[in-house]
Length: 216
Image (cartoon, rainbow, N blue to C red; front, side, top):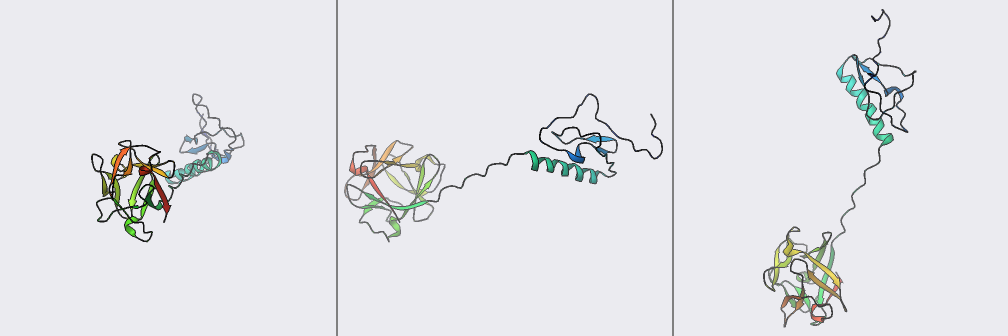
């Protein structure tokens, strides 16, 4: 049928493509938008009532504006808010005192790890435990050096790398303190003799492997 002068042509939904229903959303004037004889239907809108006005938009720019406005309204009215990821816990700064030896973990030269007399003001004894989810990094004095496995029973400082399994530890409860459990080797840090520390098979009842963690 040919449209008469002064009569606005309306583009309807094709019979083979019925409008989608979306409960709880009022499409308002955006249920159908006629743009140069092409009907644009925002995803999820119900077909509007017969009183809906139709708009012919002559330029593609205006069409984009109206279509985006309709989709934006849908997002605001019908979408669930995305959860905000929780922030990682702040590093816990502490000194590590060995229960058996009564001395504290230190790095005298930025490489070796030994025991020495406890001094809370000594930055060489200031460590931070940084939570990784299932394990922790043990970093010294806010530097880029972390305690790691150096092969065999030995430990030393090395450049921090949260993906390096040789640097992943976990503090676990023991009789009089905490075990420093090395995850990759399934061993625990302990006092050998004098100022030396080594990795041993874990024994939560052995005071040489028990550490007091004193917040600094």
